[in-house]
Image 1: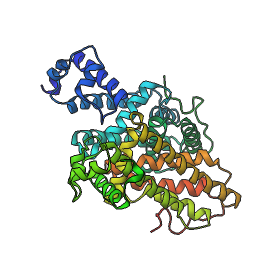
Image 2: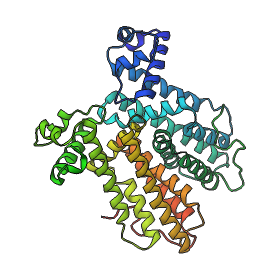
Image 3: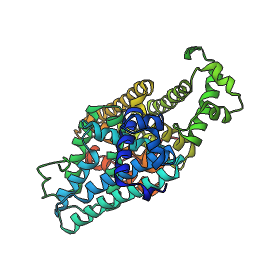
Image 4: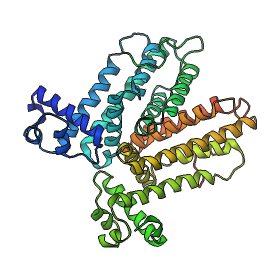
Length: 211
Length: 211
């Protein structure tokens, strides 16, 4: 069945089961049986809507990417200072939130397996590009508004995104919470001293993601 | 057979085959048959020395960890400025080096799968801790020598390591070379403006890894 023909409620059921199964077993150990075990549905339900295990995983990946993209698109403030800190907060996430952790570790496993799977690769390149563009746009807006220094938008976006991407490993997959605290602290200091203009204060919310 | 009883030449053969097979197929697709196909030996050779596929993968992981640890331990300069830049150069690596890329992407896949595999997790936590300690030691030495500012050694080490860890995804797994250039540029700028003391110049070699 083509992806577009899957009804929304079936797709939601599938995404939820894949998310849960990935957080329990990881991608390398995933089977359709384990996906079915993470839902109230039979394995036949999953095969009725999707042909292969990787079709199920791609449905999850599309959902997970859209989830982050929507959060970044909906930051809701016109102030580039507020938007920059909130965007970085979204990307860092809350490592004590089990759901967020599971999604992020799963995306990291799919990212590391992307060289061997064109569908993962195409989607993840487009995702990383769109996040980089969002960050670079915020930086350009902040420069124009005089709220930021004249930093290179693309290089600064790349630097910040690699730092938050990196936390999916040591912080989320390995649970090294002291690393999370150190990175958050140094990243806030970096934004304050290197990106914000000298007379501009960081937002009161710091690097918290918007609720 | 216990790991210690494997003769060195057999272990080298195994590590080389696993490394090659991982770079061709990724961990999620790995089978003992694919490992054997990446060597001149039969599948029976691998099962004679190791009981399971994950025993083979753990032999590779131990080797890959030792390889990076040895490079960080052998930086060879007493000057903390030179050592800091060289250590970051080792961690960033050369993304155009296919062998380095393959090893790093494989380690990222094992790291993202670590929540589901105690042996991967134990080794990778110890590895990340040892790299953090190496970076923090260099920072402490640099502070004592007056060559660095009074930055927090642990938090700064965590920040730098998450940035270089992050490049295993977008840069190495997805091949986004413009991201690599931006990160390298911004990371060098960060070390220069935030870690080095105001009157200290970065080393001429910049962020190159020692040869």
